Image (cartoon, rainbow, N blue to C red; front, side, top):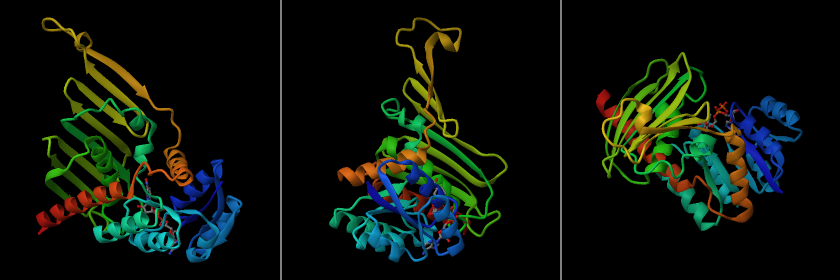
Length: 315
Ligand code: NAD
């Protein structure tokens, strides 16, 4: 069993604690939060020990989840890595590339696991698209969230858009050539709604829209590729796949005449449980994590470029 701890048990960290409790390979040694009342409450709920200073918890664990506000991902993850602990740090990996590079360098040098919490990779419908998405020509994502005051220390690009950015980068595995972006603060002091159009080296275009001031919750992504169209709903964990039939003569009258249509239904397993289980697997077997520090850095790098473009247009 891997001895684990959760650092930061606010909105998301409490779910890391719950998920570890469910996993047979995890022994949840403790939870830590500078908010003592919160640390105690979550520790009681999941029958573990509470800590108020994460440095005091580190000697007792093999691995940690870092689920503190983004601005301190770096300092907390750095301390944990320096103490020789494997780390799952929530997304985005850090606030700038210098910090991300430093975490990656230390993890590599010390042979430690550094995984980044890009949770949509563990969405069961997304996982079932492996092998189906091939050389997409156009990707479009829409991610709308209702307003909540948490996470407003960072822009919607690094808070929400980065999920779809990571998925697009994962399926494309190539460099961005050109970025156009627009966005604006509406309620908070940083960008609350944004749209980005990315052109990749192959010519593929990725169009991402994210909002955190919507009245409805939508998380969808579509892929267009030669002879196929795929539309995925992250929330339903379901994808519709349209593939052109091979042998078609003449002009068909109905869509069904020239398209094979299938619905891919995910198994609705909780992505966070799958994510932490995969992290524990890497920790136990010393295998590379499914979402590496380098991939977290790439998503951050493109996210920062999108923000740079938004700022340039605002001036
Ligand atoms: P939150 O504000 O609800 O929780 C953060 C907690 O960290 C708070 O309880 C706070 O008291 C605690 N904290 C602050 N400094 C600390 C320290 N030095 N040591 C210990 N605890 C400390 O925020 P949240 O919404 O849970 O977000 C946390 C992180 O998770 C953010 O980086 C966010 O981007 C990420 N997140 C990821 C997803 C996802 O889908 N993967 C979803 C939500 C949030």
